[in-house]
Length: 306
Image (cartoon, rainbow, N blue to C red; front, top):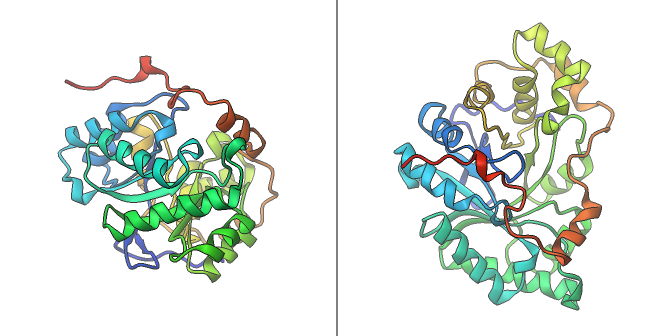
């Protein structure tokens, strides 16, 4: 599984030949939102991939940061996600248009289904997912989006989509770090030309204290965060680390000038699976008992330049 990533252009090529930057900037409503950090990431650190979601409540802020950065829209790979409450043929299309409006863009580079769950009162879950995925296929056909995919889908969920779809998902984004490394799911995706992408590469900070991670970092003269991100890259897994601190955003981008040794990769590839950052058991309740998008967003931390 650990194919060393050596592409000097810093991207992976998806099954439809679209190039995805292998390192992106994650955003969410957890921990607030930093306009300064996003502008800094684009303008000074070379990030060209931003990952967000309607659920996070910061799409409008991201649009403002992209504009402030001065980086042309066409140079940025912009990803957002459809929350399950918006699933369904017509509502998914409306959600897509709403995200485009908030992100101030005429198209999206990638649009993902956020979870395989659907609202409990939806009746036929499989039919709703089928209708929702078909809506994404139509958007792709209309060239409103360049890449369509899913997030947090396991093998059985992907089986249901693949059995009914015209277009196999280009990508599946899931939690991924040495403490949560779903090898069987990754192989499943690889066998079907579905790019596996990881979120929470630092395990929400818990991975920075792992003894094996710290040991590798000391031996290489790097930070634990850089080791964890580099480990993802060398597994050919794009990742989207998040930080609201400009200095951490810069640190996380400095991962292309060193290589983890074979023994380092083996050690990190085979760590005990002890950390789960996202509790799947709580997702259905969040879908059925909706809170406002961005409900965790600390607006006191949102500072947007005029």
